[in-house]
Length: 160
Image (cartoon, rainbow, N blue to C red; front, side):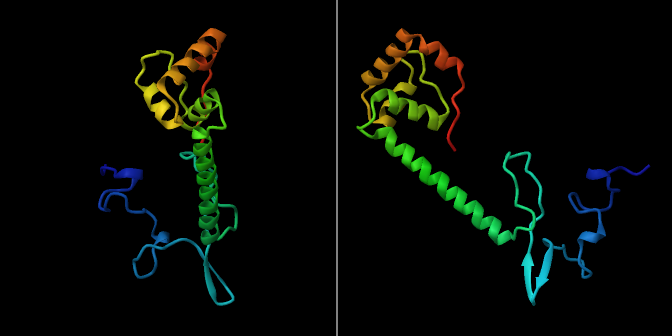
């Protein structure tokens, strides 16, 4: 019995080599993405699948690779714009300290620490343009209202 390489391929081929000759061109080069000729112009189409790793859906059926990349770039730009807006609101003097801290919690996916001497409090104070005493006061208010334990137990959903 011959030893097996990854994917059950008999030994003799380098690690990671495709085991189907259908993925190679006649001259031995690897074949690229599927192409379709439309009116003399070659177009690349992406293969459709949902990514289980990122949790993000892949390209739409029949979507050109260039269109998919443009759509991803547009979505990324929108996310960046939304994040920049949130960061501006995080330091805006129009917002109360409690609202600034909630924005910080949402952006970072972390709750306000319960310990009044926690090192993260100074980070939150700097990021929200507040004094450390203001952040500690928000801690006291939450603890007094009984929301401190509810906040710690409830997961904070990060904004990406």
